[in-house]
Image (cartoon, rainbow, N blue to C red):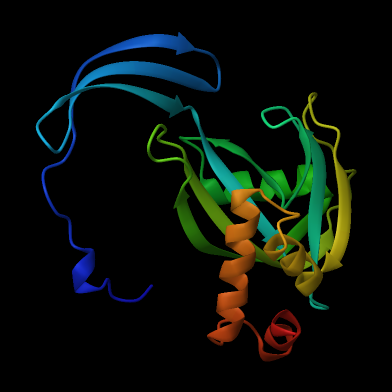
Length: 204
């Protein structure tokens, strides 16, 4: 990670949380309503979605430049979504261990090389959900059968990186973690942070 530019320093006063009241709770999220004070000094009623798991995303990249993608139906937008393998890990779990588990469960593959390449705040106006994203290479079958949890009906496809990237840039892939990771890996290839042969395939 390079040095942060000077213009990125913090400005103004931070938000102040006042009294909080939990209005919803389940095994995955909670919603707390705060009497808060905004950076402007004005009072504000603020609803915060608290996540009980950390988001994990893995871009599995093979030596031939293909990527393992997972397809599934999603409830919030009532649509079919193509994504890199993703899941959640308990906040007290080593995130790498969680990512390794998610890759194996969703694709049946294991990776010999793991690199954390990005951390993202997924919706920082209303939630505290943090995503940790990994590039997984040196991929080999894990010896088992891919399976999601009891609510997931998953399909997996191995597709060329540039084909997946073009689908994302054309708006056919809309999952934010997938789009962000495709751009991140493309940037890594451009900056020489991938093996030369693989970088050439990624860059097309």
